[in-house]
Image (tube, rainbow, N blue to C red; front, side, top):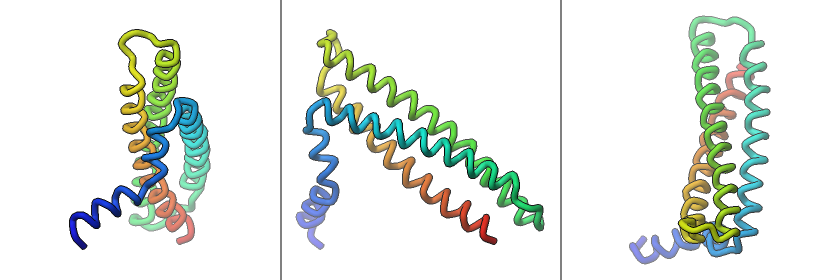
Length: 141
């Protein structure tokens, strides 16, 4: 594949991102609200996984080590979810300042922040999806 085709493919691969970042502030606000709802749902899922892991029967040393590792990763995810939730809420406060034309806060800065948060949300969502697959596999063994 030529470099030109790869660039064209990359540009087309996620048209929603390009569309949203050129969208109205109201659309970006709606996306931020969706992120907050997703984070709350993921936190609820973590509570379920916590019970699942804590109630899993004792097994051999390998099984117990895997359970301990999954519980540790669970704690890390909860920390990431909490921090991301705080950052999205701060992002929403930034939007309020943009809409009030507060000096020092620009639409462009808000959109750049939105792009960064979007990347973090997508990365964490993919990472969490992988974690869930491992937990389910562990639970079925």
